[in-house]
Length: 190
Image (cartoon, rainbow, N blue to C red; front, side):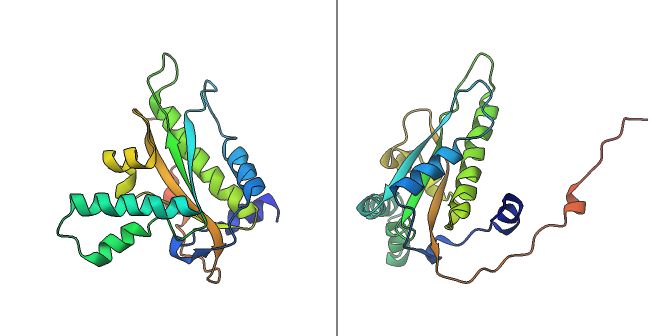
């Protein structure tokens, strides 16, 4: 598939519709290498990856379910089960972590944008290799205790969890915005 066709056909597939096969070690390494080829002012590489594969997905889910139950004692069992399986649908989940920090020259916002670009490149690389993906956040991306459980270091934050696998549903695009509605041409003030 050529690059333009890749970009025109990329779409998210819900993690609940992602199954085996997922990327093997070589494909995953290639995806992560491609993901890291982003604009990076100062060459700081202000991101890293946390991989959830195999049994680690279920163990992380158990920890998240226990935390959710602790934080929400009134939660119904159905919701606890959702948390238990949150990272278990797709064969591989890649957490993209921002390590943006104060810097004498590079604003933290630029560092965070670099990590966001890493997440998007990761999705495009997965698509280029024939996989489907979905970028999710949810409460686990913002809850400090969930972050600690899932491996964040002090000062880090999740950009997103990229679920990767093979789609079990046919390709269906969704309505896209009309680009003309999103464009303003700047003009000098009169």
